[in-house]
Image (cartoon, rainbow over all chains, first blue to last red; front, side):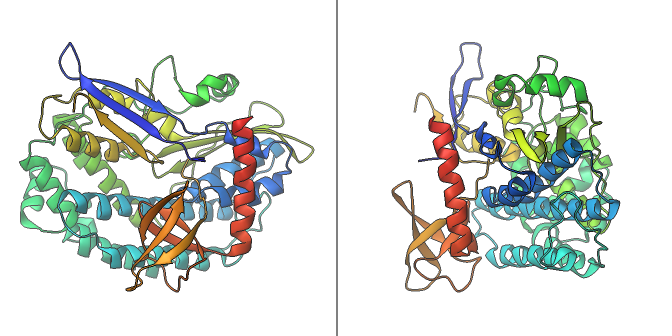
Length: 380
Length: 76
């Protein structure tokens, strides 16, 4: 049994030029029905067992959804700890994508020692913040988080040594593309060399799309849409596919400059991921609170968290502490919609390019499904 | 949905750096670079070809039971 499902992506030359793209998902998007009939506590205790890569973001969205359905508000200090744990998960995921994925393009061995250090730091952060308790239950005790600056400093050192080659604050102060390319030429660290390679190969501007960023959702409308089973499979907002990715939620002066020249092409997505990684490390002691959607239906709650790949939404219907209905809308369904951001970005590629496969893989990895994918190119 | 399916180690290389797991009946090589003290029979969580963490056998069994329940729902 392949419970996780897969994304199957096929490219072929299009009559209009560019590529014809088909995306088919076999992800089990209705799997959260598993929780129906269980108690809120049983659900919140078993849910983190099911998800590995984005388990913390799932747990945060779940408890927020249940709290809203039950009419409970978490103490601000507990919410802050939740945000810190979600941010650390995003930092780890961005480091995997950059240290592992970008090293592959550069034909460099992955820096496994640093990845192991990051895994250990994630455990240390969890231990320091919550010990053996969990902040992912309603009415969790108020947590008074200790200082975590020593963990933040160690993360910063890893980033500066392996990815940047310069202090994190100096990189975040860039506001011109020329500064980015000068840094790319002057340093041999993974991120600098990757940006330099994209530019040298002429790939900075590949994979543009016009798919808009997902706006703040309107509570009543999302409740109505979630009543339609096909919405969770292939979501549309205002009848249009939208994207929810690190790029669509990250802002900086450098990113504005890169966007102006390259739109949301491959270089912009790479700079967006790097920018979000550095900003999350900088803000780890005091992360930005997650805005909640206002409650609009009694006994039904919506919980949102910003997972590494985009916005995650849980919708929970509760009666007398029992789950009547549980739904999850994950970022992969927005981003890998058959007419969504990835499809449009791939359509713009040259089907006759000898490096089509590599270009397509870079675009897919830049947006990043949370499950495995198969890429088929016709004709071979 | 990035499911945390516990996977059992069925063999470990002589240098202890790699292991073999069985996924859907297909044998796959994975790296043990990020985990310590793994022995044949242990359950681990996988992520892009790496064992990410070791899972306690009781927790693994509880998780596998949840996945079996999920699979029954998907097939129904």
